[in-house]
Amino acid sequence: MDGFHALCQSLRPDLLRFAFWLCRDHALAEDVVQESMLRAWKAQASLQDGKAAKSWFLTIVRRELARTFERKRLMTVNVDDLVAAEEPALAAMEEDHLADMRAAIFKLPDAYREPLVMQVLLGCSTAEIARELELTEAAVLTRLFRARQQLRALCGEDTTEDPSE
Amino acid sequence: MIDHDDYRRAMLADPERDDPELRAHRADCAACRAFTSQLLAFEAKLVRALKEDVPPTSAARPARSSADILPFKPRGAPPVRRPRWLAVAASVTVALVVVGIAWLGAPRSSLAADVVAHMAGEPGAWNTRDAVPASVLEPILKRAHLRLKPDELTVSYANPCTFRGHLAPHLVVQSRAGPVTVMVLTQEPLSRSQHFDEQGYRGTLVPMPGHGSLAVLMKSPASTATDVDAVAALVRSAIVWSP
Image 1 (cartoon, each protein chain N blue to C red):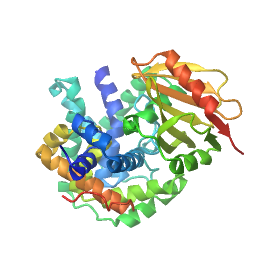
Image 2 (cartoon, rainbow over the protein chains, first blue to last red; image 1 turned 90 degrees about the vertical axis):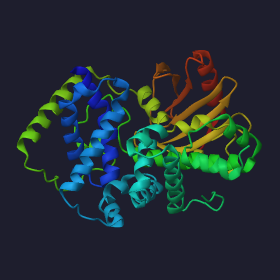
Image 3 (tube, helix red, strand yellow; image 1 turned 135 degrees about the horizontal axis):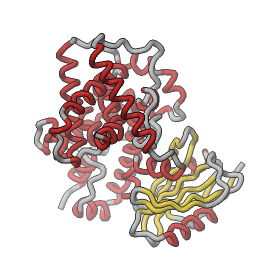
Image 4 (tube, one colour; image 1 turned 180 degrees about the vertical axis):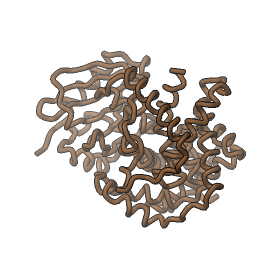
């Protein structure tokens, strides 16, 4: 039991960030992760291998997100309005380019943003992402390539020497 | 043999990938080395954008509120909860138990732990080899009111990081014992040096009277405390403070 609680505690911050970058809403991300933790707690006996915990929790959070999206039609938000709404926090950041980067991340299509967040934030391997998203590894690599290419362009990086597909 | 496009496609898909074929191409191609440096700097910003404002030791310290966890502060109005009282009550119970256990068992935040956690957020920095151009390095150091004596150090990575809310130049210096991460912590005064060995990294925190402290880390067990101390002394002697 203690081990499970410690596991929840160690994974919770990154799972919250993951949910946030996917659903773009703090309150909803908290709800989703809270609900996911409950589901995980009830189903902890099914977690046989501690090394697989991250993937196990990730699957639960993704399913909970999907359930949430199925239950209700979420309000569509304009990305620029969303970033502006976070203005006080963003203004506190010392470097403006991080705010630009966040706005750009939100503008990525979900199909590109999700594997990118899984790779960069959660440290998932290509194989893990492929398994979770039910894609081939080649497809995952293509999405990650496109995600960074688009992100670099959105952030005003010089992409003239980037390869074409 | 891979060509430029193959190399760049692979790096854009996974900047951490470091197989022999990619290394060989990078060694032979100055344009792709420059591309890699640019990409790794961009990747470091991406990591920070995704993780910014989260206490570096949050994995070991219980979160007290969403503001401790999420990258942004919550907006004014509290979130509207679904009236599922049973789930909410159970969640609160679980959260309280988790918080209590973690709070009792977790180590307190330390400067060394925070430095290690910060550095772990920019793993690509360890893979850099080529010297950062002076046109990139100097402005970063200048913002922290310092410069390095010319030709004393090979700096292969430089990023103007935010550490505990303050600007802290994050460098990777190439030494005979391998790459060394250096952070100039101008807002973290120390009374005496502290050695540490945390999460696979060996390092030292060195006071710089009037200028905060210096953090120097190497990967262990490949390094020794002597290696770390030697690099720390080298870096300290190379720093020139400016008004």
